[in-house]
Length: 335
Image (cartoon, rainbow, N blue to C red):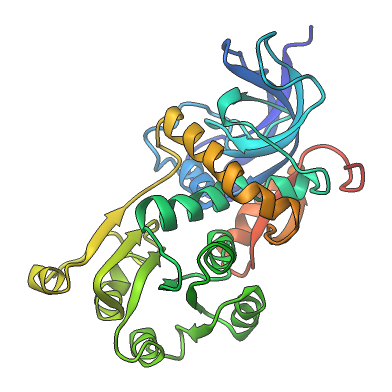
């Protein structure tokens, strides 16, 4: 059996130019793994941090955490069989011809969903689901402020909030093109953060009450405006620090007076058991909506894996609406 494959690694920590698609060993499976022939992988900001050497918990040298493909090896007790189409989160190694996917984290790809669409689901939809419902406890008809509304997680969160909670969705983005897209997905109020003070707009849209839940990708630079934008007993979930990770001055009394819950979370370093439970509940709750095409992944651009450098540069340019996908196998029409 041939033991080599091709995978993407960073030759040295640094820019996208460090990425190379090169020969690597095939993954070694445990008894609980499926071997997946990768058809598509997706690009995430986690991958950029990994490339830059800023993630100390990463063990797999091959980059990528999100994958879609076909099962080519499974143990005899597995719930999946050779030939099954699956998607899921892996512990690194997605940018490759083959990857090990823990069986309890594998999700069946609905029949009408292509591999490229499927790989755009796990990271962003699981992140949005756990952020809004496991952590933010978004209830029906509440108001949620979603920053970076046109990002992968943002586009997933808008759809989930509208379909699951009939929530009032306020979304921020940095261009009219992105705001138009947020409205198409169901956002009720859209704010251009480059031209408008989003806290003032949120208060105006909520009769000075503020949002019940904030989905925050930005961090430090939005601290004061987010604090002004959240209602009493609001839940504020920080899942990114695009605007910095250090807040120099925090008035704890303001948090106490509003009884605000501030929670920070990352999905990638969560335990295998957590990801498995999240994947299972997600497919039980959201799977039927995907099957019925009521919820769908948003894809910005598909790059062949040989153009992985350009794919990372495209994400870093921050112009994408939805997901950036790497095609590993096929021409996009064989699915």
